Structures are given as structure tokens and as C-alpha cells.
Length: 252
Image (cartoon, rainbow, N blue to C red):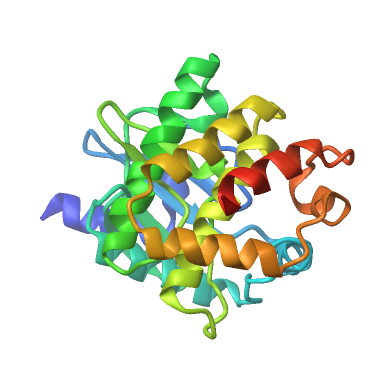
């Protein structure tokens, strides 16, 4: 009963239970501790109303799939996703309010803290497996930027589930866009072209749903995925060589 009471208080003043500094994130995300049990709190920043339109504008040069959404709606969507996945390659939902999410604390490393290329390759492979298992439940992640992949002891989890695709996209299109963003942001997060190529190759080799891979290939052939257009959202080199190699792998 005492822990339940503390959890209720957590939604009113999470700072009372803070157990560490803010993580690097577009929202305010930090650990809390209650009776020896750690959780993660997620709250919007004061500038969220400015940050979100920027990301939507940026995505117009990439997938054109990100929907401009109010903060409370994004948090509701993420809460629903975490509840639906119930720990399947994602942290479990502990509770939520209008502008706050409390989720399971996971032990491990986020992608940006990995040092060696071997570690990063291992996590990229695990992230594809995690994505495939989530997709099997006919669910899309919505923000598969590689920075959101989290290496636990024996699996990879996806941390950010607040991305919302436009409703006109089919489930196969949504899954294909999860994969495309994952591959291209492997470069964005590392500035290492070899890791981006590695991610593309592993998607083609290991992702099990051939219909989604076909949808992915068709989408990339139909859409303008030129290097100049992609520089703003992904920072891919302007010479186009890396983009050509990635496209060749994914479309083949």
C-alpha cells in the first residue's frame, strides 16, 4: 500500500523521487526511485510545441510520414503502445497521466553510449529482431531512430514509442518506414557509412516479412530519395555514394 501511495505521488511531483540526471532526449526523461525500486519518468519539455513542428518539417524531406500531434496525444499513444506490447522488446508501462509517463527501468546501454563497432553491430542486429517481433503483432514503432535502440543483457528494446504515422499508411507501409528510418539513422547516429551499410544488409538478410521488404523497395523506387534531399534529415554525405549503396541493397 505504501508503494502504491508513493507511485500516486510520483505523478504529482516526480522530482521528489529523482535518482539521477536527465538523459539525452528531446523530452525530459530521468530515473526515479521508490522504496528501492527504480522507474523512468518521461515529461514534455517547455519547448515541445516548437520542437515537434521542427521534426515534422524535417521529416517532409525524408519519409513524409510524421504527423503533427499535440504533446498529450503523443503521450497517450506511447502509453497505449507500451501497454499493448507489455514488455515485448519495450519497457513495461507502470502508469501514465496527461503529460507524464512512468515506465519500467531497464538495465543496459543506449545505442549512443556504445563504443566499439562490434557492440554497435550486435545491437543493430538485435534491433532488427526486436522490430520484426513487434511488427508480428501488427504494430509499428513510429520512431526507429537508432538512438532509441537500447541494449539490455539478453535482448534489444525500443524505447521511444510516441511517433505517430499518418493514418492513410497501411500496416505494411508503416513497417517499411520503420525499417527505412532505422537504416538511414544508423549513419545519422554514428557518421560511420560502414554501419549504415551493415544495417541495410542485415535488414535484407534477417527481416522475415518479404511483403514488407517488397513494399519498402517499391516505396524507395517511387519516392525521391536523392542525396541532397536526404542531407537535412539524415546528414548523409552529399556526394550520393552512400545513399546509392543503401538504395541498391534495399531495393534489390
